Every structure is written in structure tokens, then in C-alpha cells.
Image 1 (tube, rainbow, N blue to C red):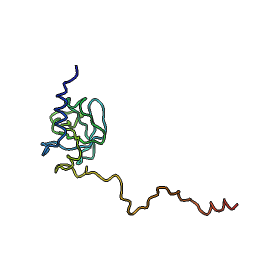
Image 2: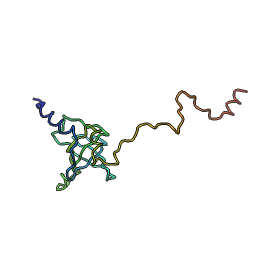
Image 3: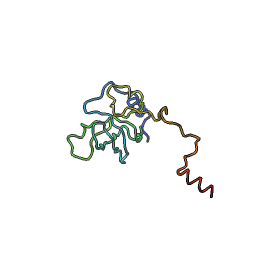
Image 4: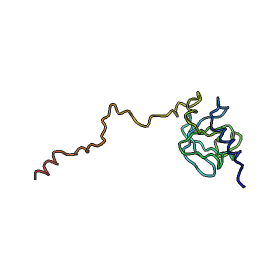
Length: 143
């Protein structure tokens, strides 16, 4: 028997709006890779090496996490246990524009423009590529 739809709606409402502040031990991370079995590799701004975090059961099969997306990770959950897990996902960033407006959003995750204005570079759209050896091309035509 499937889960009631009200459980999904509660979970969706929890993740749709950003909190006013992050809790102790919580930080925003970018998802790098899905490892399988509800484990994800995430990148936290203040660490060079990635973390392995677990997706709790309330999010499983309800809200999907894509590579390059953002999640809120609690790193203090597994401090008392010695295992390979570094934390647990406590929230999933769904409306990225609203989250980016918050004061706690990391500066390392600021969106960069995907294209340049092209003011200094000349566009090559519709132009033929330059010849590598123009002199050798003329010699071969003349012979």
C-alpha cells in the first residue's frame, strides 16, 4: 500500500521555503554524486575533501536530489559513531532563488553567469575558420 499523499505534501512544504537561520552543525552543501543506497557525496565550502552523507527515510522516494543541487547537511549527527558517514541531509534546496537571498548562503556557491557579454571578444558565428598556412595554400593553388 503506498504512503498517504499527506506525508508527501508535508515533506514538500518543509523543503519549499528556506528557514530564517541554519541550526547548529547545519551547513549548505552541493551534491556531487549519488553513491547508491541513499548515500550522496557532497561538497562543503570550507572543506577540500567531499563528505559522504545519508538521505533520511522521510525524503526517500518522495523528493529527488539531482547532481549539482544543494542540500542542508547536519554534520553533528554521526559524531558519536565511528563509521564512514560524515552527516545526514536535513533539508533539500528546491527553490534556489529564495535560498540564495538568505544571509547564510555561502559565498562559494554564488551563481556565476553562464555567458559573457562578449564586449571584448569578437563573435565567430557564421565566419570561416582562418587558414593555417595561407602561403602554402596559395602555392598549392598556383602549381
